Image (cartoon, rainbow, N blue to C red; front, top):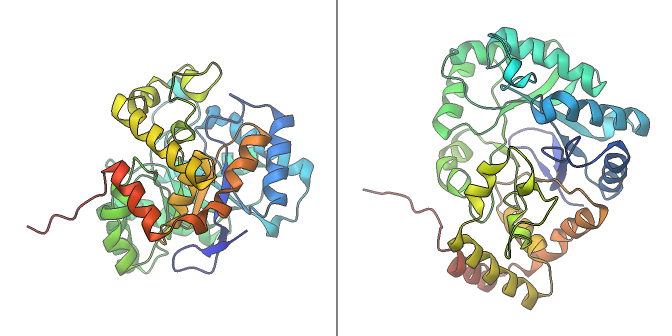
Length: 329
């Protein structure tokens, strides 16, 4: 397994990691989670991602139970959580969501309890919160780090400008700035990583923990001929994913990418993940498999990576036709 430093920090993350969004509690039980996390850890994966909102807290509880049973050396892996949406769903009351000091501190304590750990290696602000002064957010995360409850803090789905504003506040008050962002990045979702964050990479440095490198499974090719029963897009509450990815133009591109993958002798999933981690600004791409066979296939992205020659990248770009272009006007 290859490891990369998380931006301008000393923390090293495996280039492939494992996350629990959608899968834990909703698609798999403790036994399967135990098997998959064990397979991931044995393959060299050292980063496990979670969030308060995933399965309304049940995802963190499941991962906590698995980690307690595994009894791995705590220093051998990194563990993350994210706060913003709360875990009570429609029952959330004021102060149980957002990035206020109250919610961030209380959400951190709750995540530690659910994950059965003393500290989080990385704690993400899951979305920007325009209702909270950026100084309050930065001070809160700084204090959580000073208290030893968090080692590094980051953002998720923030804009480049919002990340730089956090750095401004951190510099002004001599606080610890965010060092990592968790954006969506895949063959169909490219703007943030390939355009918006470029000034951040250049000016302050930024690690990235990519979610949905397979576009919610769309880049496995399994949706090319409809939505299989039991798949993520068939789950209740995920119609927005279906609307986003199941579009005729994207299906046609996925079919062309599948032909290219077959020509290269790899799966479309392996090719798509390899394409994501081929970007030098990617620290790690989070995998979300529900079966051992899926995870094993996704791990083959490391074998597919050397196949991404200049010629192959050009062929992929010709299929995608969506590379962000800087506006120099």
